[in-house]
Image (cartoon, rainbow, N blue to C red):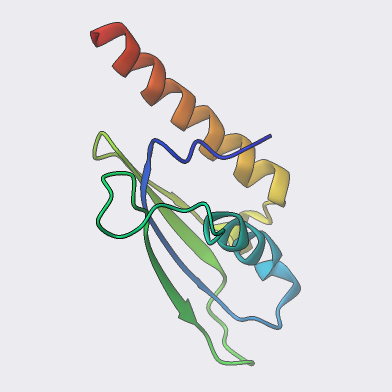
Length: 106
């Protein structure tokens, strides 16, 4: 499953790099920071904000994905113990809904 890069406008995450619960945050971040990501001057640019937590932080990893229609989805990755597949499925589902709404509007 791939991410709907055309419909994502922002990505914010906070995680401890050494925590095993942070794996989905790190992998989604790696998928978004590819060389094919649009330049900042492009309309398809994704604004990425990363907050690295200390090694022994009690705060669980989380991510917030902003979409083109203004909707934001906050995924509490650590609290819900989401896997990478769960995160990609949820973001992909919402992205496809937004793209379908835009195609129906014309």
